[in-house]
Image 1 (spheres, rainbow, N blue to C red):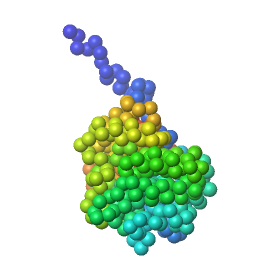
Image 2 (cartoon, rainbow, N blue to C red):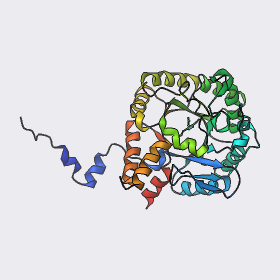
Image 3 (cartoon, rainbow, N blue to C red):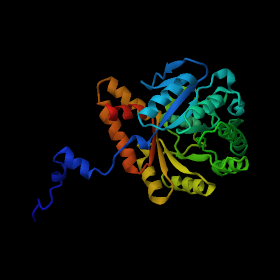
Amino acid sequence: MNYFSRRPRRNRQNEAIRSLVRETNVTTDDLILPLFLLEGTNKKTEVESMPGIFRLSTDLMLKEIEACMKLGIRAFDVFPVVEEKYKDKMATRSYDPKFFYLTALKQIKQEFPEALIITDVAMDPYSSDGHDGIVENGKILNDETLEVLARMTIAQAETGIDMVGPSDMMDGRVGFLRDQLDEAGFKETGIMSYTAKYASAFYGPFRDALDSAPKFGDKKTYQMDPANRREALIEAQLDIEEGADVLMVKPALAYLDIIADLKANFDLPVAAYNVSGEYAMIKAAAQKGWLDADRARDEVLTSIKRAGADMILTYFSKEFAESIHS
Ligand code: PBG
């Protein structure tokens, strides 16, 4: 046998041939930037565990969005940083139209009608218990929580945003929210469902950013067990039946097989959330001089797209766009 009848290295000889045979290219079209919103004006605080990522008040966030739009990033997922004094058991601020998150969304959408603005639907930022649902005797109530989620969803839709992102993992919420949106006349408001959201250690820095860690226990009775693969197909099937527009896998890196599974089995677009801990790992190692952060970033984003993600929520969005333009 001639061992050299094939020489795969021929297609790797220089960048010209490598770029011709490259199967996956990440572009700014693929990226969604998560943003952390502060109440007030002219406020900017860095998230300690996420170097380079800032919580921003509305005025500064508008500037940030403008800068990102110029770089080709057009989709944003906005999360509110809620002070403890506003939190209560029923997350009532989440649907108060005067609350800063909702007034800011309205302003953002007015200034940037051409941007895609995604919101977060879950109780944890506003909950004194720090959980995504209503807590009673240490349990997270499912069906009662849907009512609160629906109120915040409608309140968000009223601001003019494009898409809601239920990140709570309650059963039946996609269908419930779809019905409520339609009934209220918001037929064009989309749903990006956190379809397969795992109970992950990689959300740590995000909970620092929002100060939203659960006050007791963990999220294992609603978020998925990291050991489960087939269960993601059940969640996806349900979300499709219930009317989701986009299916999301979260986190991304430790769940590339799940991204590939959803892509192979369903026809809806698949989003992957490259979460806070995945960002922090690279930044921390780079600060120690242990790896090249830019190359690690590009490799990670490429792997997520290669696995099958049509879009990636990532804190690297802006710096990735800057690296392309530089
Ligand atoms: C909560 C929510 C979380 C994230 C997005 N929405 C954290 C959690 O479930 O505790 C995590 C995002 C990240 O880590 O970047 N509804």
